[in-house]
Length: 348
Ligand code: NAD
Ligand code: TYD
Image (cartoon, rainbow, N blue to C red; front, side):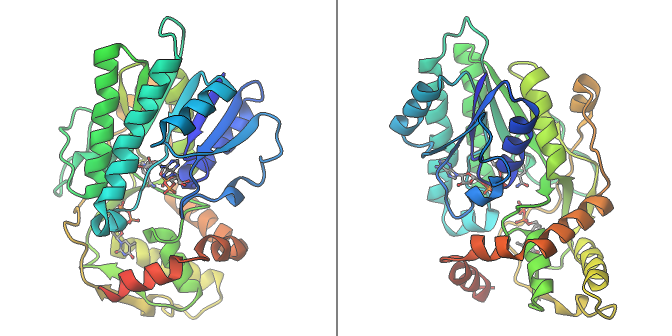
C-alpha cells in the first residue's frame, strides 16, 4: 500500500505516521502537509530517515498539489487528518475552517475518486471529532447514531466534511471509513490547547486561564490510543461506517487543572498549591459546549480496540515529555504565535 496521510506533521497525524512507518515497513507512508503553524516536521524527526517514509509539502485545497502526490507515489489509500483544529481560532476566523476542512476534504475526495479504480481495494479514512454531535447535558453519551448538532464554526466545518465523506459513499460507492474521537492529549500537542497550554504556563509561572467557571466537561484520550484506533479502523473497519473513539474519561476542566497543578508541583519540587495559585478565571468562550462524552462500544466490541493506559499514567507521561522537550515548545511557538496568543488572551 502507498498510504497518503494528510496532516501528518500535526499532533495526531504525527503519531499516526510514526506508528504506521515503524509497524508496516512493507507499506509506503506519504505525509502530505501544508505545514501551517500547527504542522512541524520536527514532530517526526525519529522516522524521517526511514525508507518507507516520504514527505510532500502541499495544500489539500489545491487539486494540483493532491494530484501530483497521487501520481508521484501511486497512492492507494488515504488517512485524512489535515484540518484547522482549534475552536478558539474558528470563532475568530471561520472562513479558514470552511476552506481547509470542507473544501479541502471535498477536493481530496474528488482527486482520489479520479485516480482510483473502484473495482480495486482502496480505503479513504476520514478522521473526525465528537464535537459534531454538539453539547451534552449531565446525562448520556454520544453514539454513532446521535444526530449531528455542531455549534462552533470548527465543529460545523468538521460536520460538513463528514457529510461529504458519507455522501461519496452513498452516491459513488466510494470506499470511505470514518471515526469521531473525543479530546486527545499527549506529546507533540501544540501549546494552544488546554493541557499543553496549562503545562507551559505552570512551568513558566504564568496565569492559567480558565474559561467561565471551569465546569465544562471533556472526555480525554491518550493520543497513541487514538492512533491505534485509527490503525484498527483503517485496516479492519467496515466501509461506509463511522466509529466513535473514546476512553470513558470525563473531567471537569477545573478538576483536571487542579490535578495537573498537583502533579506539576511534585515534578517541579514546588510547595503544594504554588501552581494552583496561578489559576485565573477569564471570560467564557462564546457558545462554549458544556459536555462531551463518547460511547466507544461499537469500536470495542466489533474491532477489539481498548484504551491502553489510564489518564493518570498518560498525563504523567505527557508532563514528563514537555519537561524534557522545552526546545520543541520554543521551536513551534517561535514566529507569530506569541503575538497571536497575547492578543487572544487580552480579549478575555
Ligand atoms: P493539528 O492542528 O495539530 O494538525 C493539523 C495538521 O494539518 C497540521 O500539520 C497542519 O499543517 C495540517 N494542515 C492544515 N491545513 C492544511 C492544508 N490546507 N493542507 C495540508 N495540510 C494542512 O490537528 P490535530 O489535533 O492533530 O487533529 C488532526 C485531526 O483530528 C483533525 O482533522 C481534527 O479535526 C481531528 N481530531 C482532533 C482531536 C483533538 O483532540 N486534537 C480530536 C478528534 C479529532
Ligand atoms: P481545547 O483544548 O481548546 O479543546 P476543545 O475546545 O476542542 O474541547 O479546550 C478544552 C476545554 O478547555 C474547553 O472546555 C475549553 C477549555 N479551555 C480553558 O478553559 N482555557 C484555555 O486556555 C483553553 C485553551 C481551553
